[in-house]
Amino acid sequence: MTYSINLIKLFTRRDDHLFKLNEAERVKNVWNLLFLLLGLTILTYVWTAWLGLGTDAIPANMSDMNRVEYELRKAWFLIGRAGFAILLFLFILFISSFFFWLFNNVSYKKLFVLQMNILLIMLIERVTWIPLMVYAGIDWYVSPFSFGVIASSFTSIEWVIYFCGAISIFQLFIIWYQVKCLSWLSSTKKGWIWTGVIFWHLLLWAGTAALSYYDLFLLYLIR
Image (cartoon, rainbow, N blue to C red; front, top):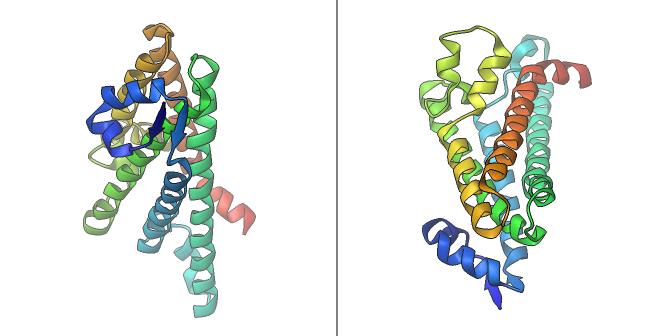
């Protein structure tokens, strides 16, 4: 049986398409979607960088730079964000799939297909940051869709705020979706699936918080 990947129908008709994916001996449309998602990931991060999301470090010493130096700094920032987008793309699709493959008896390729949907959800979340930043001046970690805004009212510890800001309704939906799909495709006990998925996301949120906390330090270190 050959299954042609349809990311939208994996959301809207999940059980039906998970059954087809589970029974499939061959999966089609992988490369087309791979390049599409790569393009969307790069476009999303370049777009947010162009609008100013995450550019705090650029104007920090703007008065000491001439016009050419300032524009060059912005260009390098855009290139850096494109590079980060590629790394995120590879990490979510390949590394995350490998992690789930380690404790579930599901083929790597099928987990890879599921992670395509996860990446799509993450890109949608990042697109929601744009109007919040442009029209309300709200950073991603205090988005009304995340727990960062709640954490900021209880603590001033930046790492904690970043960590809670990484936890959003989109991320909670991703956890639920991954557990549902893995429970469908794998014979692993549901309790272990929940444990593995939550543990992985705790690591991701901690990593996101660390990157956000040290980003300015790293920028000044490598410039």
